[in-house]
Length: 126
Image (cartoon, rainbow, N blue to C red; front, side, top):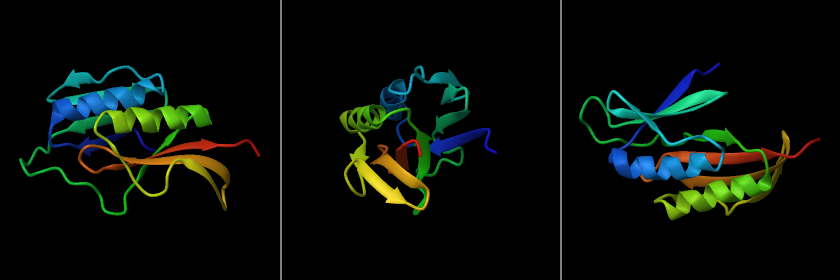
C-alpha cells in the first residue's frame, strides 16, 4: 500500500545520526542524501527525513505512530537502545510483551529527536 514515508525534522544532521543508528539494527544502511533529504531504503519500503519545505518547524503527528517490523525480540531491544543512545526518547510502556486481538507481540515505543513516534514490533509465531 505504501511506497514511502517522509518524516519532518528540525536538525537534519542530528536526525540522520538517530536514524542511521536505529535502522542499522535492521540491516538498513546509512541515509542516502538527495535533494536536501536523507532516504533509508529496504526491500519493503523507503523512509525519508526532510526539513519542512515551507520553512516552518517540523512537528509530529499527535496520535500518529510509524510501526516497524522486527525479526526478533533482541532486534526490538537493540532498536530501542540505539534510538535512546542517539537522541531518542522512550515513550509509553517500557519494551516488553503485549497481548491483544492480533496475538502476542514484543514492542518498544520510541520518539525520534523531533517527537515522531515509532513502534518496533516483533510478532510471535501463532
